[in-house]
View 1 (cartoon, rainbow, N blue to C red):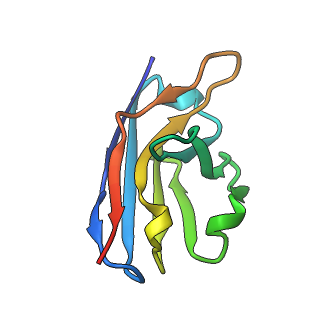
View 2 (cartoon, rainbow, N blue to C red):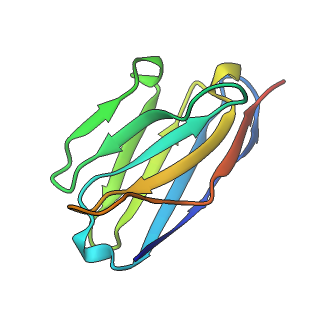
Length: 116
């Protein structure tokens, strides 16, 4: 079993920056891909960014050029640097960790609010 603990959310003005962190514990050595999803009221949870254990990244079109995902494999920690934030980036951000043949593990979520 993998436990994920997120931190770094908060309130920021449009154009500002935030950095989210997600630390994995438990059976973390079998983790392959990690990533971030977000959910806003009335919408399905959507993928924001993912990164494999080899460092390959994938981003939603809406965040390309503004968000950067990175990972510390030794600590199985994943980060999301969010720059040039927009009001539409507001939502609950969830960390996810995937292991082969097992269901993904999810964090508890951290609120990001972009508002003036």
